[in-house]
Image 1 (spheres, rainbow, N blue to C red):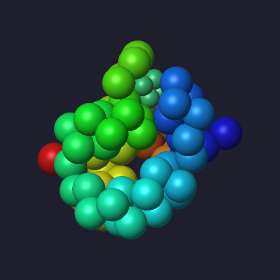
Image 2 (image 1 turned 180 degrees about the horizontal axis):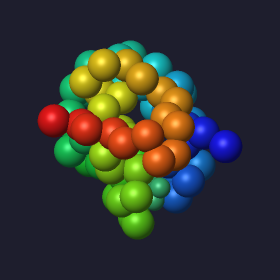
Image 3 (image 1 turned 90 degrees about the vertical axis):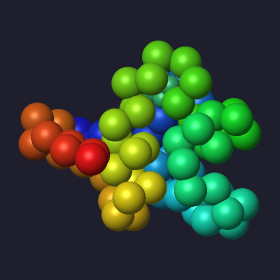
Image 4 (image 1 turned 45 degrees about the vertical axis):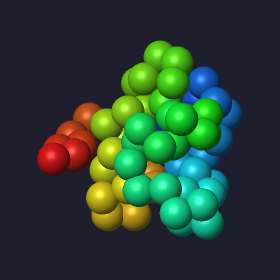
Length: 68
Ligand code: FES
């Protein structure tokens, strides 16, 4: 099963990316301020960072993320 959403905020990364682009949000801090994702358990944090960097919205568990 791919990692493709922020479970705590119940939002798929594809929808999150769409919202981020529509609102002009480019950092995870801005997504947190808007309460869109990544404010609770933060397990999605590295995936969301990677999504913001390259637009990837689905990740294979165990393949590594390498967000920086
Ligand atoms: S999965 Fe995103 S904050 Fe918990």
